[in-house]
Amino acid sequence: MPRYIKKISKQAGLAPGTLVHIGERKTEKAKITVIDYDNENLQEKVVGSVEECFPFKDSSTVTWINIDGIHDVSLVEKIGKEFGLHPLVLADIMNTGQRPRMEEFDDYIYVSLKMLYFDKKNEDMIIEQVSLVLGKNYVISFQEQEGDVFEPVRERIRQSKGRVRKMGPDYLAYSLIDAVVDNYFVILESFGEDLEHVEEMLAKNPEPKVMNTIHKLKRDTILLRKSIWPLREIVGGIQRGGSSLVTPDTGPYYRDIYDHTVQVMETIEAMRDMVSGLLDIYLSSISNRMNEVMKVLTIFAAIFIPLTFIAGIYGMNFNPEMSPWNMPELNWKFGYFFALGIMILVAGVMLIYFKKKRWL
Image (tube, rainbow, N blue to C red):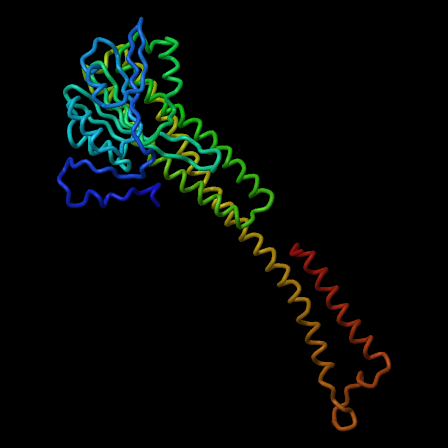
């Protein structure tokens, strides 16, 4: 349940904007990484304190400040105070159950989204909240733990590939959001492989354990839709917002993310229908198998009913000497074989009849 609904009881009764970490503590100590660059120069380092980030606030270069570990209230509070972040924004950053959203302020844009990646070891999907703050010359990213999908962006910055070193912080923010969205396609590919595997299992032998797999796929589909659906509004809001922090040159790139987001959502909707179809196929297969079993049992019962009737008649054991009505077969030399012959004949006629009716 914690994957779907975060416990927010810690905030109950507190004043709005009170900083309380909601979620699992995934790292012991927060790690702060700073990448400062322009077209000619690059500086990358891990800083020991948040105060070392403050000089980059008004620099002429582009600065990316990445914070791994949002459980440290004092750290988030200090960086929020220095960069002028609203207390409600800081509260949302520390709430890992926050719905993905975007909010535009005078001198910065706040974006919250879900970063998904697949844990191959445990065969499970990991969800992590990522918060981005886009300022006039900086981007601040807040993550729950170390390890993300941003390494390709870092490599492009280090090797000066593409446009990232030539453009401003709005393009950097685009690159980070684009990395998150691109990883959605990786998740969907893995999800699609699981769907195909379940389809093969249903076609061959729909065992009861398949039901658990289908339910897991259904839960993951709901989780994917919940995490990704608001992203379309976020990217659309940045694109249409008209903020001075997003230059016209970067606008087409955000439109490209919007198209990718729509494509992801269409794929998720299609997969959700497929999962529902798999559940229907499984239930139909189980029902058909049960019908086949009942059909066979009913045929055997129908065959043995008249045989039981015949055996019942000849099992009454009337004594011809004591009874006024004589059963001639009781003392007949071939009476036993006569009764068996009648039974075999009745069973054979019924089998022929069932085959003609295509019940067998």
